[in-house]
Amino acid sequence: TQLLEQSPQFLSIQEGENLTVYCNSSSVFSSLQWYRQEPGEGPVLLVTVVTGGEVKKLKRLTFQFGDARKDSSLHITAAQPGDTGLYLCAGASGRTSYDKVIFGPGTSLSVIP
Amino acid sequence: EAQVTQNPRYLITVTGKKLTVTCSQNMNHEYMSWYRQDPGLGLRQIYYSMNVEVTDKGDVPEGYKVSRKEKRNFPLILESPSPNQTSLYFCASSFLTSGGAYEQYFGPGTRLTVT
Image (cartoon, rainbow over all chains, first blue to last red; front, side, top):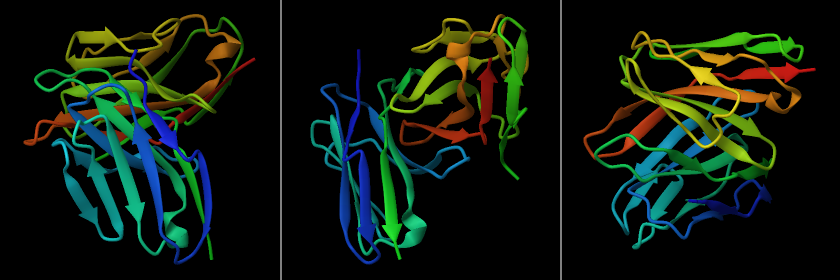
């Protein structure tokens, strides 16, 4: 059974601080995605990474896919209150055909003004 | 506006009373999924569909049924709901990007309580 673990589970920081959250698995994924979910809403896709070692930047957010495609990290620079939310990673094994998607349990981030 | 819609958004029902949660997408996506989200367990896939009349089980399919008669609609059916199906449900539609990954777009969620 494929599992994705995320750490930390909860994170509360002051506005302006930097942070990194991690997504780890013993399984290899063909692609990995990060989502942000706000209370009462569905997850919103932030980024997809498909190549081992790939780094993608989205304004103050930097995403990295591990070389072995088993893990990923999300780094936020100078966090703002608008970054508050639940960050989910999701891995997919399928490449040429649609396959099951596995979600991690999430990291709940609170940025205090 | 590209979107995934779900109805109802909130539902309280009693054990054994059949219910259907509808899901519709206007993006012409081939792939659609249903998830449930529970505290401490995260999002778990119930069923997914690769195209019209093609569906398959996810990780937690017991107690649920789906159908895909049209590309845009993917209803979730609970024939005999039980209290352990109390949860937050999300529908998602997906497409295959040129980079070889499936990107998902989620609906707003349906909060179901079974008493």
